[in-house]
Amino acid sequence: MLPTISHPTSSPQGALTLDDVRNTAARLRDRMRYDVIGRDDIIELVLIALFSDGHVLLEDYPGSGKTTLAKALGNGFVEGAPNDALAIPSFRRVQFTPDLLPSDVTGVTLFEPSTSTFSFRRGPVFASVLLVDEINRTSPKVQSALLEAMAEKQVTVDNVSHKLDDLFFVIATQNPLDSVGTYPLPLAQLDRFLFKLSMKHIDAASELQVIKTWGQPRPVGGNAALPQVQRADVLAARATMRAKVAVSPAIQQCLVDIAQGLRDPKRTRQGVSTRCLVQAVPALQMRAVLKGRDFVSSEDIEALSAPLFQHRLELMPGVLGDVLVKDAMRGPIEKLSRSTLGAA
Image 1 (tube, rainbow, N blue to C red):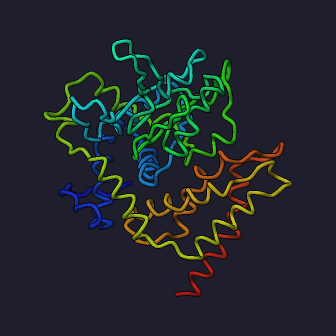
Image 2 (tube, rainbow, N blue to C red):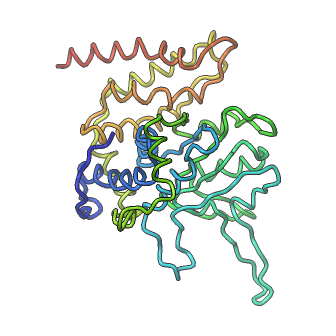
Image 3 (spheres, rainbow, N blue to C red):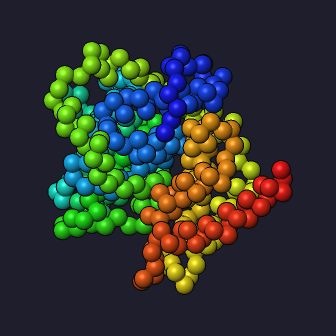
């Protein structure tokens, strides 16, 4: 869990410290925890993904709070000027259904009779935080509309590329049990997600608190009393975290060794990609920041291994993903620990 800290004004961009990064994350954390009860572990992982410029796939049951969580994150950002036609909204939600079209996500080019010109009407993908609800309930053609957006932060419509928000962050959801009328995500799309998280039912105490407080007046000021975050704060925090958190050669070698173990041809049809390792580095750096360190340790790798690796694997029959990840990590982590002790 993130430490409780004060909320001073952020330093100018380019002069941030790791304390400023933690402060920005704590402000978003506080707003999310105000609206979402009993999900502190998920909130921390979502923040790690946001600050490391990744995306999150939530596998959850209906009514588990996924929309509330995504809205709470989106509402943590200061909106652009209401009269600015080009302002990026902080949060948008798309319900994926079988009849959805790619243009319903990316936008469409329209003819304006009054000016005899064509103009582009932006779709919901033009947002800071995009909730894609039940991503596996639409056709692969629509699913693929997100590939370019998630990888390159742009969409191409009628041979014209349109840049998305630099902060662009996707939270997608799918139901782990209801497979009727769904289109499983291909590995190429799963690989675009930094984390795949499972949201189980919250504990009994948290569930009782939800019931007691549902529909009751909130404290005076409520969420509005909690400071919001500028988009620029997160973008600056990303750059600061990447520059000021050390990733030793031993950590890099450990990641490569784990990847080699996850590509065992006897246990996997397809292992993790190089993209996965590249995305893992800032995620490990951000977790180190949240734990008060300026260096990545083996603890970060062990904590993030399951959400980082398991969804990217295509396994041979009878092989369990969690078992394979633990087996692949054992040797590299031991080697990393020996090298760390030797260096000390």
